[in-house]
Image 1 (cartoon, helix red, strand yellow):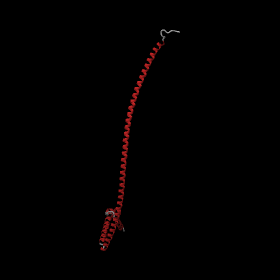
Image 2 (cartoon, one colour; image 1 turned 60 degrees about the vertical axis):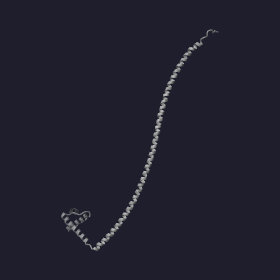
Image 3 (cartoon, one colour; image 1 turned 90 degrees about the horizontal axis):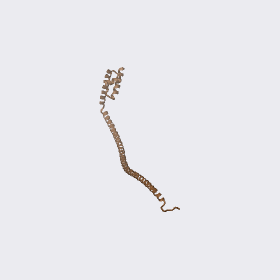
Image 4 (cartoon, rainbow, N blue to C red; image 1 turned 30 degrees about the vertical axis):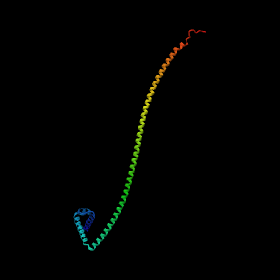
Amino acid sequence: MAETSVKDRVYAAAEQISGERNPTVSSVRQAAGVSSADATRFLKEWREEKAAAGTQIAATPQAVLEHAARLAGTVWAEAAKLADERHAGLEAQWSRERQEKDHELAELGADLDRTAAEKDAVTADLTAQLQAAAAQLESAEKNAADALKAADAARAEAIRLNIDLSAAEARAETLQQALDALLQRVTPEAQQPQAGDTKD
């Protein structure tokens, strides 16, 4: 009874492991929890039974094999048809998506070209405005320089005129003083009596 249980565990472990890789004594022993001797013996039996089963399949009657071949051919044809249809559907979907992407790329390209043209126009306009402003600034600076020169000249002329005015005022005052002195000398003589005048 225990041997049967060990054998079942080894067979079950071998079946499970064979779904992923070739079962070994070590992997079966670990998975089934049996000794190395039991794993070796029952794994060998399991392989022999598998080989015998393969031989039995090889000895299947010809009619069954032909029927299986026809069925496999039918299944394969149906699978190929489904694959072709799926491929055609995927290709059509891919073509639609590619057309949409191409359309989007064309729109983005047009937007980019339009934006670039707008940028160039704005840049040209701003450049023209900047040049005009620079010319106005240069003209204003020149006018300011001319105005400063004119103001300096007017200031110098005013200073000169003030000096001339001060000199003229001083000269006029000197002449006035000379005139006053002259008048004082002349006036007493004019008031003296003439010879021969009689008193009443």
